[in-house]
Length: 367
Ligand code: GLA
Figure 1 (spheres, rainbow, N blue to C red):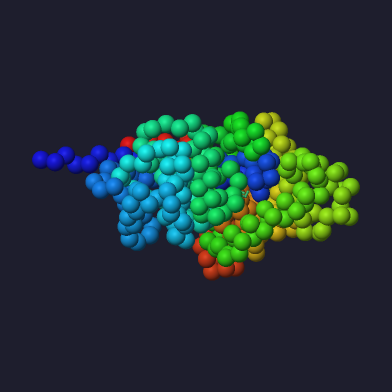
Figure 2: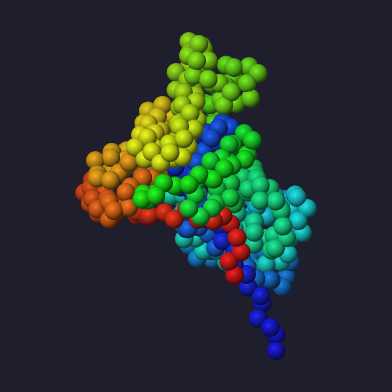
């Protein structure tokens, strides 16, 4: 009797970013936390020289001959994240084996919690099937898959957080040196994520535009490699030459990098009030200078800030919908959830999904 095919399971987490938004592609600082929600890939060997890919969240199974993967172009569907990763692995000399990949995401898709990075990283592990690559190489190849194959000029934060997540810890990532340190989360508070349940269409085009606007601001500083090398004083000196919009974008990036440093110092001394203040400043800057927030995100933040036990609240991720992140006293979380839900329902007729996050380990084999 034939033996049933060997099934393995691989998991990669989504992330929530505590602070440091739209700084990663400017070589700045970010502080994400890997979640216990993410993406699981169940892999089993396949007979013919093909890759079968299916997802519990989307109908249908897709089949790709292994020999066409290296020359494939994006299809415009979710499977591009898997194909892009497969293509990057081939470029690194990995010999892909015929396999059946069954995908199941527990992180909401398109909700700003890095469902794409979770899919990329879990697919990379499944396709590697136990062959090892350095962790950083996995994060980078997944980022390249998204930039080159999917066509989204993202930074490294999401893939990095998915690979390097750690229990009970946030990750302070320096996106220039691509090195990190772990930061303990103060006791007694929860990281609470609230999902607006909306995703405004301009998201990806606006992202590209922000990347370009930062480049435009940088072009006024010949010889500097990134906005990381520009100080607020430099920006003020050049402010007459730089058009208003790129100037405002650069101001956000420069101040946001400083906020990450200040947040780190505040976390180390357990100063929740300062951490909360910095989160709110970050939100206001994303709202007014970077212009990536939206009405629903602002409403969730503004409402959260009226509730008891809330230290701070801000939008998280790329923006234009998706989620907010708040630091809430553990004892106040139930009331927070209830009040925020009621207020949002009354205003928008939508029920926001609210999650209490458990900072979790990075991508791994789970069975
Ligand atoms: C998206 C991108 C990240 C980062 C954030 C904004 O999540 O994938 O690289 O730029 O937006 O901070």
